[in-house]
Image (cartoon, rainbow, N blue to C red; front, side, top):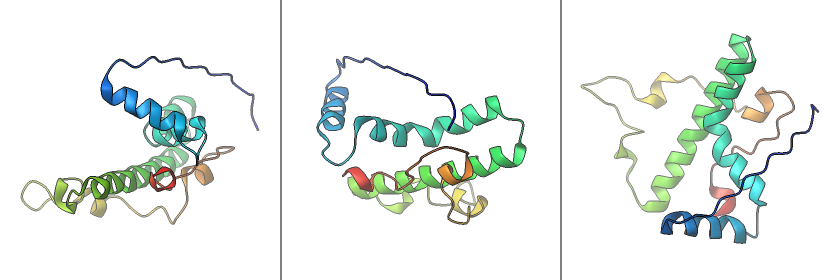
Length: 131
């Protein structure tokens, strides 16, 4: 593994929704706080970090595809949790017959972001692991 980095974040929420979120993360009996936070942010921010630090276009594209798949699964899970229908906008066609995001993006052959980026432990199971 690479060099260890000590990252600390202190946050005192003031908004009711943020308070509920932090209480949920703090009291989650299944996952450690760091795991919950990393799963939530990797899908969006890992492609930014890889793009900034890598010139390997194939690696960047592979990680981006995997992250998009994870984000789609998370969006689907959020929709199901809230009782939204699939036609919420993410999973349907838009603008007079153009292809949906599900049709445009190729399959990542079941690889997780962790398998695609070196030395990265990543759970891409969406939110189901902490509900």
